[in-house]
Amino acid sequence: MSDWLNNNQGVLAGVGLLLVIGGYFFAKNKQVIKNKVSGSPHIKASRVQAGGDIIVGNKTINSNPHPKPDRPYIEIFVDGATSSWGEYEVKFGFRNVGNITAVLKKFTVADLNIHIPTKSITLNDPPVKVAVGLTNSRLRSSKCEGNVLKLEYEGLDGTRYATVASAEQELRADKQYNIRGVSSPQYIND
Image (cartoon, rainbow, N blue to C red; front, side, top):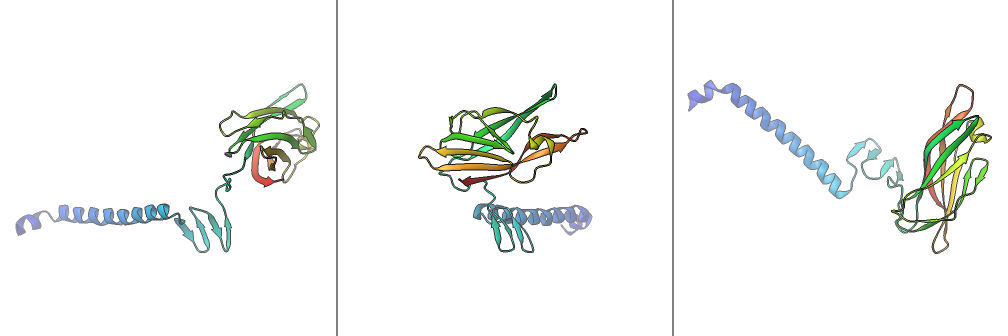
């Protein structure tokens, strides 16, 4: 037996190394699984943690954008834009990602009040889409910071809500802006 061990030292060293590496990854994976099951963050650096809610110092930012399940949440998104003959139009979409039916009421884009159909939408309904002419809007002619989009809606019980968001603008060569998307949405009780 000792001859076999002496003749196969390389093989034994390789097997030992594989066992050590395998044990390390097993222990590391077990810790990540434990953290995921317990809901605790699995990334931590100094006073910053991520993996569940994001904790920076003593402030917690809920990573779930829809923390209250008992209300409507209407997302605003850009579904395309067209430009021809000097006219610029953006198609906005509204999608309910909450579990309560919402009734659309009013949509404001920068300095424009946009007529939208009074329509109820639920979680699984297709998005409602509205084309908005922005040719003479300040959203087209200048850089706009902050929440320039506001969609007002109600729950079936009459509770008023709103989604406010920023527009992602892209400067063109002619100093006009194209609207490429929607960012930083906030869901508020109006």
